[in-house]
Image (cartoon, rainbow, N blue to C red):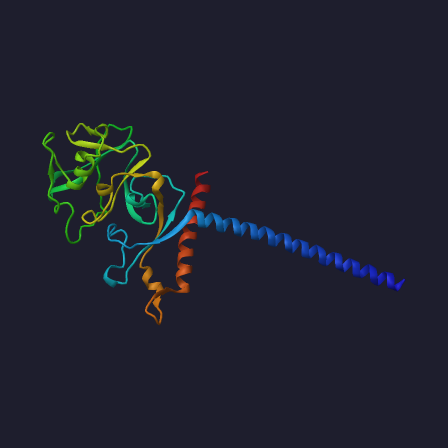
Length: 282
């Protein structure tokens, strides 16, 4: 009788342990699936880039001549292009191999009319970007406070190109690529109400410029880019990432553990804000 009791107790304990084990295993599998799914989603949705060129100064800064100051950005591949967005895209002359990326600002999208012409301002003659949005009959002169004004000024340091037919002075690189170039289809050029020639952005395309207009190689050089060649929209900027790097004994720069936490704090802060925004909107 005593042996049967001990056997019963042992079986009871084994079943209890088995239940606890199954519960723990189930929780572990659920957490593994959740973490794994989130990790896959995160890596597909977000990409990190360091800024290496001066075309987006002063908004985004590279480590020029060992200045030690360099910005990094998180890009979301889940985007809906809007005016003024900063985007990372494959360089239009390398879309086949997709090895080189550039970072620029969205100025106009499909169906918009855009031109860059010289106008009289309180500071004298300056180049200004004019856009007539798709579906609108209003021509807007963009007030671009983000443009780099240090050193040589884009607005005054490029000799204008005079169009004989309209008598308007245009920014020469824009004029050559969009209004005069042999590869430009005539159907995409229009004279709007202000008497200037405008280029109509094609279907599923984007017109983009750098904030440092004098040095930027952008749509004025490459033409418009296909939306399919846009990697994503910049959603998080981390300034001065060089402070999180140290030189090893071979002189190479390596990131510190703190840099990982800085990146995670920045991107998860963005995700949290989006979640709050979503529930607030609903």
